[in-house]
Image (tube, rainbow, N blue to C red; front, side):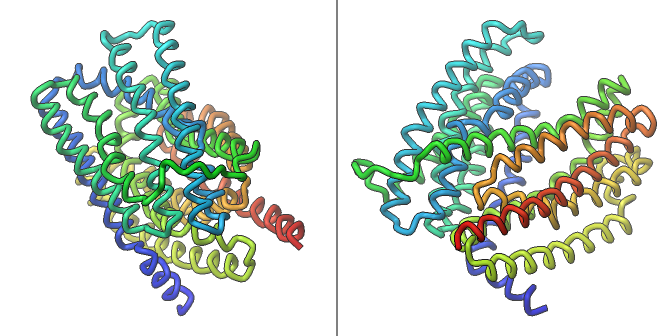
Length: 421
């Protein structure tokens, strides 16, 4: 029990309460902003903007060629603030150029695609520029974490959500769908402008970083690819349900039944976002890492048991709040709840520990393997069990990829420590 208490105290001492509060509030404000957009904009027009936006969202993880991922991992290994600031300036310059290249390629590519909906290309071109301010926003957040300033990191999340809410309220009301697209674009830009000076970095500094080697770029590239493939893992079920069942109602049912389980995945992300820099700095201290793993796993075992038990007892009530017709899919809901515990206990932790030892490529291979198994399994289970089959596949893969992450981490970590001796 002392292990659990010390873990929670450590999390709170690193301003974890600010991070978790800001994350929850951001989700609430984002929901309100989406609701406002529905009130001010016709559904068919809003759908066109969202279609273009989803294309851009899929590419956001590779903005800056993933250099924001490299910054947080390699920056944590640097000893001085001067070195970390120098690395930030390098990532800012190179990452913006890489993001500009992606924007250019996306715009050029849009001229070779025949879009089904009118004005899709216009919105895609506008929203493609979202790649640049989003990258800058992410590296500012990463730098706050490197400075162990999780309070400011949390504020970036909170202020971003406030600006999003206000901009969507005003711009959607006056300029409809075009205003909504502009609101999405200006939100990370405005937030970045507000916070970049709070980093206390001399932007005229001429000190060059020595850590930005090929491995640095390779790490960021594979980390970003891993995020893209992981996104696909959550999307592929919906796509295959539509393709194999040819029933749009089943797509809607699965989308809403999975809404609560997948939304709850924010919890391990909050803990990892708060702690990643700390355990990466101490990655060669085996005793610290082992104790951290024990503490984390213990905490999320308790959290998982509580959530599964709660949902098992009140699943009918929970699903009924969404729609009474969803109660018939209680088994599917509980299977997904069991599945996310695999991410809670194993995948969330060991996937990030793999990143902390520089093995982002291993995460990519695990996610790709999971994606392949997802497609194969769903082709068999969805026609046989319907959306329950998709839930079974997802739940099994959450646990399987978690176990693979744990096994490979321990294997690679032992090799890393031996190499260090």
